[in-house]
Image (tube, one colour):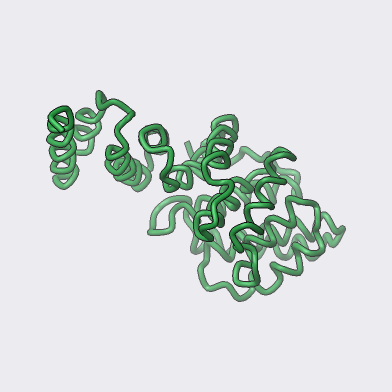
Length: 253
């Protein structure tokens, strides 16, 4: 208990700095906290979210990595890191993050954790072994039912079941009310249509999604920034497949 007292005081001071908008001072104060204290992950997550809102993505990533290191049993920072690492082009770190998350939560029976894990680790084409594990996670947690057509469509697309993927996503791409989720569905559907040699449909779906994203889905900002960023990650993949554009263009640095 005595050993924790100085750290508790430091956490309190960091929180006060943050409440005053002095985020640099809060980060400086937390810089020498041992990354073995699970409680520190709450502050690192809060700092990471601040840096995302400020558009400082490398600083956000640093804070979320510290959070994962301090409390590897908490799923939230893995979830935040997935789109951030892809948006900044660090696919190697993205793979490491997914591998660690799969090891931690691959056998969860919590549907919410399972859905985040599967979706986060399928934002980019996975390794075959990871794909098998993630598909099993969907079934294990019951996260792939009709209530989550977007997830099911993504899983089927990554497994090469393009007709099934398109079937899951057809309604989601036209009826989903959340713009970021709708763009995600449109991008996956467009890629499935392209793989099925339905070129005209793929171009039409892609165009509709890109227009919606331009109007209503910024890369950052808003309460669902991670879904917005995921939409842009899938947009780049869809444009690379359908239009032949570089998958790394227009990344936010």
